[in-house]
Every structure is written in structure tokens, then in C-alpha cells.
Length: 267
Image (cartoon, rainbow, N blue to C red; front, side, top):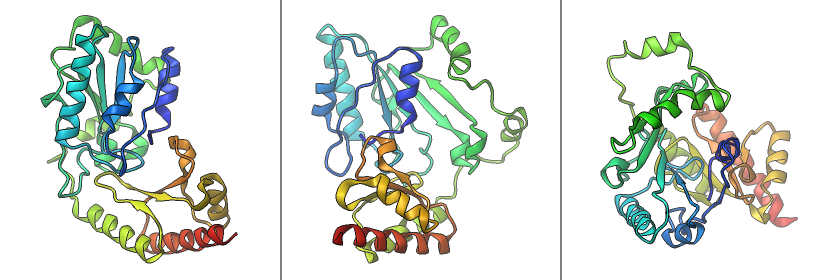
């Protein structure tokens, strides 16, 4: 934890049991917590990197450690666990953090990516799955043909799919995102807010005084500052702020979060 809230619904749609593992301090991977959460019935592990909402980008050391843990589990007689890596923000990783390709460390891996995040087209939901060759069997491919319908989503708009092939490049200009990341960190420090420094993605993860993120989110909404409460991501004592908003809105929003947080601490 934290985790993207829709994962729980995805598991429910296929009858899978949703089990979470706590993160390490700083929201890195806690491999011991992951191992405690596994059982002989564990079939898949979902890893979101960079993480929505914390912004943590898994390091090569973390991924290699996770791959070794999954292999030890298999050798002890457990199932071959499929590693599902949600890396829709893989092109939005801020130096000195780097993107590490999961295929390089674990063969039984599925990677989920999204053009809509890279290109600022989030509402279009245009993405794809990439399977390690060890998983790309005829049986798996037949399952993938129907999986989107089972989840209630059929196809991305055909117009946007056709537009993608005409782009000169899929590269992302990190500079404006990095500048906004740095700006919100500076504003949060000025407002005396405790935050997790995002190594990737589009969000600032903000600690809530008193651990009641829902109440603080409601107070902020009354002052026309909209955030996502941490309860949606499995951690009630936090808020998620998207830093792609206009800079004046970010400046005002973080100032208001600081003011409301101060009121919570003094109440």
C-alpha cells in the first residue's frame, strides 16, 4: 500500500481474493511484507511503478529482489506467480530515478502501459499489454481477446488509435512535468506539509494531520480545492494532489491545504 483503487474491483470481477502488502518507509517495496502476504494460492502480484498515488519508482534492486522472492516461492512448491506491472507512467520518471524494464528481471511478467498518460489524453484510455514471450501462449492470447469486455470496456476510440501511428515520436518532454513536481515540493515545504517526494507520475502524496483524509478533503472541497482522499488508495491518512493543474491553482491549492491542515492540528 498505497494502491490504485480499481485493482480491488478487477480482482473481484474474476473471483480473485485481494490481498495487500504494506510498503517500506518512503513507500518503497517491503519484500518481507510481500512474502508474508503470499500463500500457496497466490496466482498473481500487481506492482504499480511509478506508483499512483505515492510516486515511488521501483529500483533495479527492488525488482531483482522481488523476482528472487517469486522464484523462491515457486521452488517451494507454490504456483508460478504472474507479475503484473502497471507502468502507465513509465515515461514520466524524474532523474535521478530511472525506469527499469521488468522483463529484464522476471520472465513471467505482463506489462500494462498507456499512451493516454504519456500524451496527456487520460480520458481516451488508449493503452496496451505486453507479455514476456514465456507467457505468450495460444491459451493466454485467447483469454486476452475477451478480457476487456469482461471488465466492461470494449475498445479505445478508433480515431485516436489511428492518430497514434502518425505521431513522429512517443517520447515525452519531461521538463514541464519535472518543473511542476519541483514547484509543488517547494510549495508543500513552505506550507509545512509532510509529503512523499514523487519519483515519477503526476501526483503529490500528502500526509493528513489526524489521519482523517475524508474530512480534510471535504473541508478543501468547500474552499474549491479538489483532491482525492487517501482512503481511495488504502491509506486514510493521506491525500492525493494532481500537479498538472495550472500553476496559480497549484499555488492556491497547496496554500489552502496548509491552512486547513493547521486548523486540523489545532482543533
